[in-house]
Length: 194
Image 1 (cartoon, helix red, strand yellow):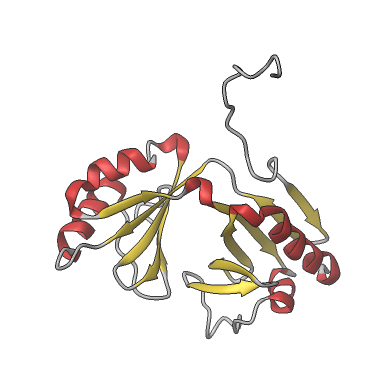
Image 2 (cartoon, helix red, strand yellow; image 1 turned 60 degrees about the vertical axis):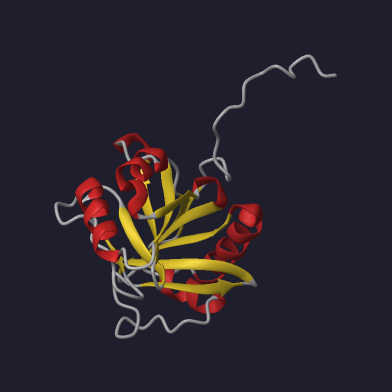
């Protein structure tokens, strides 16, 4: 047995904090983000929404959208499906999945998702052009405005895409294929960067 078998596990990132700029486009791994999946019990939408808003300042988003706190604080909540959402919060802002689940209590079903997702931020003048090569969604702002959220696929990998601004996106994909997902997005950015 190796001498270091008693070494404690250390927290890390899936892509080592990857961050690069290609012309006017930046691509970076988002680190320090905690993710919590929340599902609504039958007939419990009102109570669950009230508890989440009290704990985080986040309102339950409508289908195809994500919400941010009205006070401009950290975090977001994205609509995933009927009666399901994902809450994203900064780990250092007291928004850990365990704390949020405790605040929600029996009003909802909570599952920590932090280790299941890789999160990338893509921004800049060529972000839309890069995504258009690998994403089947219509990215015209009249169809996908800032504040929209959608499930899609990119290079055969499942993706949740959030549009932060006209040229800013957050992309979530399975952590088990983090390197492949980064390769797909980076290749498209390299090929289209202005």
